[in-house]
Image 1 (cartoon, helix red, strand yellow):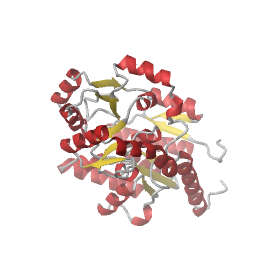
Image 2 (cartoon, rainbow, N blue to C red; image 1 turned 90 degrees about the horizontal axis):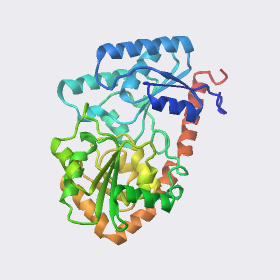
Image 3 (spheres, one colour; image 1 turned 45 degrees about the vertical axis):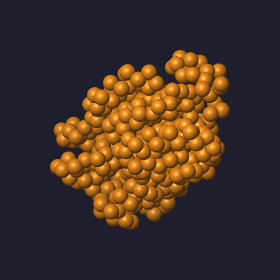
Image 4 (spheres, helix red, strand yellow; image 1 turned 180 degrees about the vertical axis):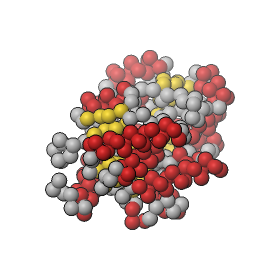
Length: 364
């Protein structure tokens, strides 16, 4: 039991990350197969297994994250009679869907929210999107703290942690020169993260001492990159792709600016992490991103899917040294003041205690 009086069980699809959570957080973890694709038979099996788990463990609170865990967790918990059912909305893939798929995902989203007792969009933009699409009633919705699902541990994400020697060695390993200006992207290398546009715009830059560092896995099943993009990544000597990295902090530390031209987000951790590591950011004008970044203060906000806008923003970072220096100086402070992890944790704990009291379960 934690110091706050809760026994916590972490439930997720199986994988090495689940073992890491067991070790790092000191909680019980349970593997439950869930697929990211739409698969009615597999999804029903996941739902049935979670329902059975709830009947066995009899939790008082179930709190779900991600769309698939949301429908499995909220519907399963409701059927099992769990009194407090909470769902955090941290991004909606349906924003990029159309036709029959969009209607199906809309239905699943409404069913998830109908099964929940409270719904927490993790950004003001998502809150407004849910309201405008009438997915649930207004009284079910609440924004915790200033947004974000978990805040950012600014003592962990600090440039001071990565020594100059570590940075020098990693630069040497990656072929990055001392005078190179490094743009970094951290995340899955897929279409809806804006990677096709990012690579195309970078290849249009005409500056010799500039690198693009791509940190994240290629995913060829759900949303693969264009073949032309893959070819450019492979052939352009100034584009460095390092794949998935368990610790992204060294890559932030040797970089000068984050470029994150995603099509849709909830409240992106990457933008907060980069800011805490003193990087200004170029982000799309989408919810979450346009709340963390304030134009001209700690970065630049650009239209979605716009190659020219990405290129212009990168050129601004390279050439306008005075503005770049100001944004860099603001980056960490603007994260620590608004999104420090403990602030989000305290707000969430207070919410749990309020909900327990409202249900008469605060002494259980």
